Length: 172
Image 1 (cartoon, rainbow, N blue to C red):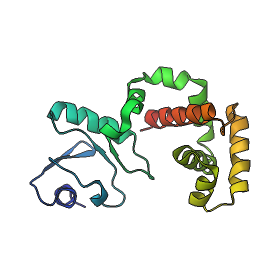
Image 2: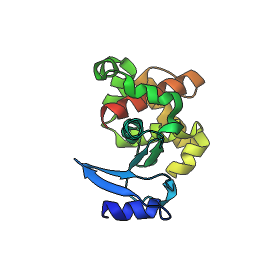
Image 3: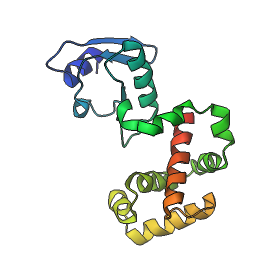
Image 4: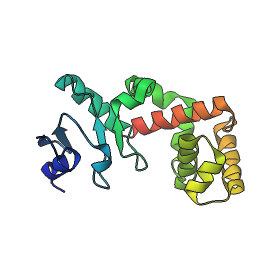
């Protein structure tokens, strides 16, 4: 879909400016309807008060998008945005991030981990994955053994979510 048409969809009541910049489309708008982005489009949304700052924020937010969460507002990242500031070599050298990188060869495990981290609930993850909760529990137990810590403990969930996010940022 042409970029100017995306602009009209996400901001129908106001004028927008749209332009390609490399392999990224840039849309300048004062308000955005996040639910109006077409399927398959990923977007990072920055604040509107300063164009330079908004551009940086939107690029950072774009790095946090996933197929499950294709539109991310920088303001919604909170402290997670700090992960984008970690040097790549520091993130690559982290044992938890390296374990996630090794796991990336198993899309099924990575999806299970992603959904569990997003929901924080074994039963909710099972619903979203269309699996029985005992199947998800077995997968998480196996993944936990691979990672070397218990995923269902609060600290394990936090650790895993941070490692998964850092790994995604390296591959964004």
